[in-house]
Every structure is written in C-alpha cells, then in structure tokens.
Length: 163
Image 1 (spheres, rainbow, N blue to C red):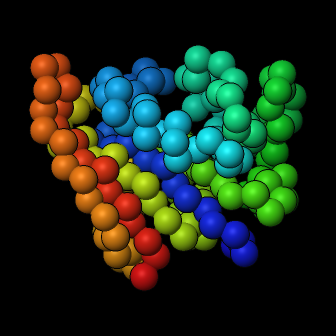
Image 2: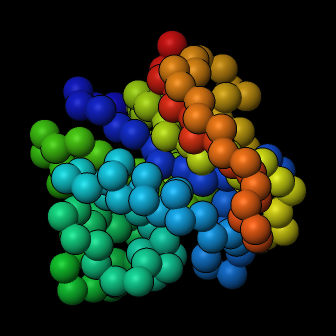
Image 3: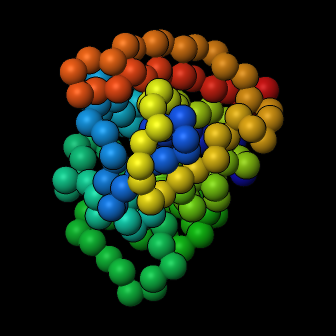
C-alpha cells in the first residue's frame, strides 16, 4: 500500500465497541495525551464522522478526510475520496489513521503498526470494530497496563507491529 509507515490509532473496548453517538464512550485523559503524542507531526486520515467528532482542527497535524460525498468540504481539511488519494495527499509524511470503523478496515491491509488502547470493559455503543489481531499477522511489541481509577475503566496501551 505504501512505502512509509501507516499506523492505525484505535481505542477499542474488549467487546469491540469504538464509538457511541459519534463520540468515544469513555473519557481517558491518558489516552487523549497518548493520541496527541502519536499523531502530532503526522497526516491524520479519518472519515467525515470522525472529523465531525473532533473539537476542531487539532494543532500540528494535517487533517485528511476520506469521504464518498463529493460535495463535502471543511476549512483546513484536505478532502479525498479513496485510499490511494489519501496516500498521495500524505506524500512522504507518516500517516495516522484515526477512524472510524470503515476507514480502519480500508487501511488495515496496508498498515504497518497499530497503536491500540484496549479499554478493559464491556461498553455499550453503536460502532464496533473486530479485534485486528484475529486476522493474524500481528505481533505485540509493547503493553502498558493501567488500572481502573474513579469512573475510568482499566485499560492497556498496546503496540502491534505487522509480523
């Protein structure tokens, strides 16, 4: 797919939920901090709904939205209509694919790395993603466990690399 790293940045509950009503169904400040660190300086590729869920343009990142809607546009966003267009728009910069589920599925075959936040709880939601490890071909490079705290569920930061 690409000669440069394509990383999927995914937060996923153990039951597969990645979203509810266009938002993350949990609030984990450590995950937001990690997201910022992982995506700063990269080209963030996302679907339109994921872009709509952001609080606005995120600093120090290019925003590329992959959409089927030929009329859609937003200030400060590069709009593309295919995976190959997204890769071309990124040129030689590292790519962070940030969602949603359809966009993850499109980029998964060519991804070299997955930065996964595993929310260690069954969470209700309306958007799910299968565990990418179930397809095989991934090895775990790192795992950092975090216990539950107050209203925050336990979670783990997991780095996966294509085997």
